[in-house]
Figure 1 (cartoon, rainbow, N blue to C red):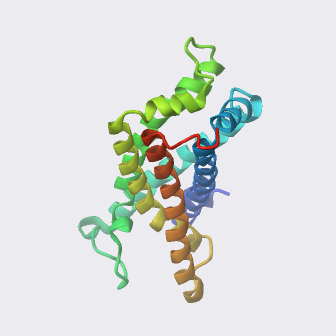
Figure 2 (figure 1 turned 90 degrees about the horizontal axis):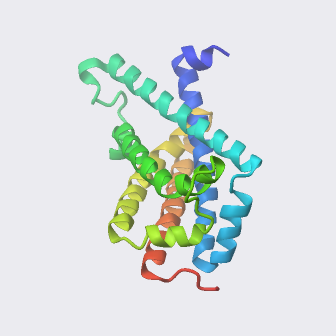
Amino acid sequence: MSWLIDSSIGRKFVQSISGLFMVLFLLFHMSMNLVLIFSYDAYNFLANEVLGANWWAIIGTGVIALGFVIHIIYAIILTLQNRKARGKDRYASPSKTATTWSSQNMFVLGVFILLFLILHLYQMWYNMQFKELFMIEGARHDGAQLVEEVFSHLWVVIVYVIAFIALWFHLTHGFWSALHTIGWNNTIWIKRIKVLSNIVATVICLGFMVVAIAVHLGYSNLLG
Protein backbone atom coordinates (compact mmCIF):
# COMPACT_ATOMS: atom_id res chain seq x y z
CA MET A 1 0.00 0.00 0.00
CA SER A 2 3.05 2.26 0.02
CA TRP A 3 2.22 3.30 -3.56
CA LEU A 4 -0.65 5.41 -2.15
CA ILE A 5 1.96 7.62 -0.52
CA ASP A 6 5.11 7.22 -2.59
CA SER A 7 3.78 7.37 -6.14
CA SER A 8 2.21 10.30 -7.95
CA ILE A 9 -0.69 8.12 -9.12
CA GLY A 10 -1.28 6.89 -5.57
CA ARG A 11 -1.35 10.41 -4.17
CA LYS A 12 -3.82 11.53 -6.84
CA PHE A 13 -5.98 8.49 -6.09
CA VAL A 14 -6.11 9.30 -2.35
CA GLN A 15 -6.83 12.95 -3.14
CA SER A 16 -9.69 11.91 -5.43
CA ILE A 17 -11.26 9.46 -2.97
CA SER A 18 -11.09 11.98 -0.11
CA GLY A 19 -12.59 14.62 -2.42
CA LEU A 20 -15.51 12.37 -3.38
CA PHE A 21 -16.07 11.65 0.30
CA MET A 22 -16.27 15.40 0.92
CA VAL A 23 -18.84 15.74 -1.87
CA LEU A 24 -21.06 13.13 -0.19
CA PHE A 25 -20.74 14.98 3.12
CA LEU A 26 -21.62 18.30 1.48
CA LEU A 27 -24.73 16.77 -0.09
CA PHE A 28 -25.82 15.48 3.32
CA HIS A 29 -25.03 18.76 5.08
CA MET A 30 -26.85 20.79 2.45
CA SER A 31 -29.92 18.52 2.63
CA MET A 32 -30.00 18.85 6.40
CA ASN A 33 -29.75 22.63 6.17
CA LEU A 34 -32.73 22.76 3.82
CA VAL A 35 -34.84 21.25 6.60
CA LEU A 36 -34.31 24.51 8.50
CA ILE A 37 -36.36 26.42 5.93
CA PHE A 38 -39.44 24.32 6.65
CA SER A 39 -39.22 23.41 10.32
CA TYR A 40 -37.07 24.63 13.21
CA ASP A 41 -38.23 21.68 15.33
CA ALA A 42 -37.15 19.13 12.73
CA TYR A 43 -33.79 20.85 12.31
CA ASN A 44 -33.21 20.98 16.07
CA PHE A 45 -34.03 17.28 16.31
CA LEU A 46 -31.42 16.46 13.65
CA ALA A 47 -28.80 18.89 14.97
CA ASN A 48 -29.17 18.17 18.68
CA GLU A 49 -30.65 14.70 19.09
CA VAL A 50 -29.24 12.88 16.08
CA LEU A 51 -25.98 14.81 15.57
CA GLY A 52 -25.33 16.13 19.05
CA ALA A 53 -22.64 14.90 21.43
CA ASN A 54 -23.60 11.26 20.84
CA TRP A 55 -20.99 8.56 20.31
CA TRP A 56 -22.02 7.93 16.69
CA ALA A 57 -21.99 11.66 15.92
CA ILE A 58 -18.56 12.02 17.53
CA ILE A 59 -17.18 9.13 15.48
CA GLY A 60 -18.77 10.59 12.35
CA THR A 61 -17.24 13.99 13.08
CA GLY A 62 -13.83 12.35 13.51
CA VAL A 63 -14.14 10.51 10.19
CA ILE A 64 -15.19 13.70 8.38
CA ALA A 65 -12.34 15.66 9.99
CA LEU A 66 -9.88 12.94 8.94
CA GLY A 67 -11.20 13.13 5.38
CA PHE A 68 -10.70 16.90 5.34
CA VAL A 69 -7.18 16.63 6.76
CA ILE A 70 -6.17 13.98 4.23
CA HIS A 71 -7.63 16.04 1.39
CA ILE A 72 -5.77 19.17 2.51
CA ILE A 73 -2.44 17.41 3.09
CA TYR A 74 -2.50 15.66 -0.27
CA ALA A 75 -3.56 18.89 -2.00
CA ILE A 76 -0.45 20.58 -0.60
CA ILE A 77 1.79 17.65 -1.57
CA LEU A 78 0.43 17.47 -5.12
CA THR A 79 0.65 21.25 -5.57
CA LEU A 80 4.29 21.33 -4.49
CA GLN A 81 5.01 18.28 -6.62
CA ASN A 82 3.47 19.87 -9.71
CA ARG A 83 5.32 23.16 -9.20
CA LYS A 84 8.62 21.35 -8.76
CA ALA A 85 8.03 19.25 -11.87
CA ARG A 86 7.10 22.20 -14.07
CA GLY A 87 9.62 24.66 -12.70
CA LYS A 88 9.46 27.97 -14.58
CA ASP A 89 6.75 26.56 -16.86
CA ARG A 90 4.35 25.66 -14.04
CA TYR A 91 1.66 27.95 -15.42
CA ALA A 92 1.76 26.36 -18.84
CA SER A 93 -0.74 23.63 -19.66
CA PRO A 94 0.87 20.21 -20.24
CA SER A 95 -1.71 19.36 -22.89
CA LYS A 96 -3.40 21.04 -25.81
CA THR A 97 -6.73 20.98 -23.95
CA ALA A 98 -7.77 24.42 -22.77
CA THR A 99 -7.62 24.70 -19.01
CA THR A 100 -10.34 26.41 -17.00
CA TRP A 101 -9.83 29.15 -14.45
CA SER A 102 -10.97 26.84 -11.66
CA SER A 103 -8.48 24.11 -12.65
CA GLN A 104 -5.63 26.64 -12.57
CA ASN A 105 -6.66 27.97 -9.16
CA MET A 106 -7.77 24.87 -7.29
CA PHE A 107 -5.24 25.36 -4.51
CA VAL A 108 -6.11 29.04 -4.02
CA LEU A 109 -9.81 28.18 -3.97
CA GLY A 110 -9.07 25.42 -1.48
CA VAL A 111 -7.20 27.79 0.85
CA PHE A 112 -10.08 30.28 0.75
CA ILE A 113 -12.60 27.51 1.48
CA LEU A 114 -10.43 26.31 4.38
CA LEU A 115 -10.39 29.79 5.92
CA PHE A 116 -14.16 29.97 5.55
CA LEU A 117 -14.47 26.52 7.11
CA ILE A 118 -12.60 27.71 10.21
CA LEU A 119 -15.08 30.59 10.56
CA HIS A 120 -18.04 28.26 10.02
CA LEU A 121 -16.81 25.72 12.58
CA TYR A 122 -16.32 28.45 15.16
CA GLN A 123 -19.77 29.92 14.58
CA MET A 124 -21.68 26.64 14.51
CA TRP A 125 -19.89 23.43 15.55
CA TYR A 126 -17.82 24.99 18.35
CA ASN A 127 -20.87 26.50 20.01
CA MET A 128 -22.89 23.29 19.74
CA GLN A 129 -21.19 19.89 19.68
CA PHE A 130 -17.74 20.95 20.89
CA LYS A 131 -18.96 22.88 23.96
CA GLU A 132 -21.44 20.14 24.81
CA LEU A 133 -18.83 17.41 24.39
CA PHE A 134 -16.32 19.11 26.69
CA MET A 135 -19.02 20.48 29.03
CA ILE A 136 -18.07 24.10 28.36
CA GLU A 137 -20.52 26.69 29.62
CA GLY A 138 -22.69 28.25 26.96
CA ALA A 139 -23.27 25.17 24.79
CA ARG A 140 -26.19 25.79 22.44
CA HIS A 141 -29.02 23.27 22.22
CA ASP A 142 -31.15 25.38 19.90
CA GLY A 143 -29.37 24.90 16.59
CA ALA A 144 -32.05 26.61 14.54
CA GLN A 145 -31.97 29.71 16.72
CA LEU A 146 -28.18 29.81 16.54
CA VAL A 147 -28.28 29.66 12.74
CA GLU A 148 -30.88 32.44 12.71
CA GLU A 149 -28.67 34.61 14.93
CA VAL A 150 -25.58 34.01 12.78
CA PHE A 151 -27.36 34.80 9.52
CA SER A 152 -29.06 37.86 10.97
CA HIS A 153 -25.86 39.75 10.12
CA LEU A 154 -25.67 40.80 6.47
CA TRP A 155 -21.86 40.59 6.37
CA VAL A 156 -22.06 36.92 7.40
CA VAL A 157 -24.49 36.13 4.59
CA ILE A 158 -22.22 37.92 2.08
CA VAL A 159 -19.15 35.98 3.28
CA TYR A 160 -21.05 32.69 3.08
CA VAL A 161 -22.34 33.40 -0.43
CA ILE A 162 -18.82 34.28 -1.63
CA ALA A 163 -17.53 31.09 -0.03
CA PHE A 164 -20.22 29.03 -1.76
CA ILE A 165 -19.28 30.57 -5.10
CA ALA A 166 -15.65 29.61 -4.47
CA LEU A 167 -16.84 26.12 -3.51
CA TRP A 168 -18.79 25.92 -6.77
CA PHE A 169 -15.67 26.61 -8.82
CA HIS A 170 -13.71 24.12 -6.71
CA LEU A 171 -16.34 21.40 -7.15
CA THR A 172 -16.98 21.89 -10.87
CA HIS A 173 -13.38 20.92 -11.57
CA GLY A 174 -12.62 18.73 -8.55
CA PHE A 175 -15.60 16.36 -8.88
CA TRP A 176 -15.07 15.35 -12.49
CA SER A 177 -11.30 15.30 -12.01
CA ALA A 178 -11.70 12.84 -9.13
CA LEU A 179 -13.94 10.56 -11.20
CA HIS A 180 -11.46 10.84 -14.06
CA THR A 181 -8.62 9.78 -11.77
CA ILE A 182 -10.39 6.68 -10.45
CA GLY A 183 -11.12 5.39 -13.94
CA TRP A 184 -14.00 7.22 -15.63
CA ASN A 185 -11.69 8.71 -18.21
CA ASN A 186 -12.79 7.53 -21.63
CA THR A 187 -14.04 9.92 -24.29
CA ILE A 188 -17.68 8.89 -23.80
CA TRP A 189 -17.80 9.41 -20.04
CA ILE A 190 -15.61 12.49 -19.73
CA LYS A 191 -18.23 14.83 -21.22
CA ARG A 192 -20.97 13.27 -19.10
CA ILE A 193 -19.10 13.54 -15.82
CA LYS A 194 -18.23 17.17 -16.53
CA VAL A 195 -21.95 17.91 -16.92
CA LEU A 196 -22.66 15.86 -13.80
CA SER A 197 -20.01 17.87 -11.93
CA ASN A 198 -21.69 21.15 -12.86
CA ILE A 199 -25.08 19.80 -11.74
CA VAL A 200 -23.81 18.44 -8.41
CA ALA A 201 -21.80 21.60 -7.66
CA THR A 202 -24.78 23.81 -8.50
CA VAL A 203 -27.22 21.80 -6.38
CA ILE A 204 -24.88 21.82 -3.37
CA CYS A 205 -23.90 25.48 -3.50
CA LEU A 206 -27.33 26.79 -4.45
CA GLY A 207 -28.85 24.79 -1.61
CA PHE A 208 -26.47 26.35 0.92
CA MET A 209 -27.06 29.84 -0.49
CA VAL A 210 -30.85 29.49 -0.38
CA VAL A 211 -30.76 28.59 3.30
CA ALA A 212 -28.44 31.48 4.25
CA ILE A 213 -30.48 34.05 2.31
CA ALA A 214 -33.87 32.67 3.37
CA VAL A 215 -32.94 32.70 7.06
CA HIS A 216 -31.58 36.24 6.79
CA LEU A 217 -34.74 37.48 5.09
CA GLY A 218 -37.00 35.66 7.55
CA TYR A 219 -38.45 33.17 5.06
CA SER A 220 -37.40 30.10 7.05
CA ASN A 221 -39.56 27.88 9.28
CA LEU A 222 -42.41 28.13 6.79
CA LEU A 223 -44.18 25.06 8.10
CA GLY A 224 -43.67 25.85 11.80
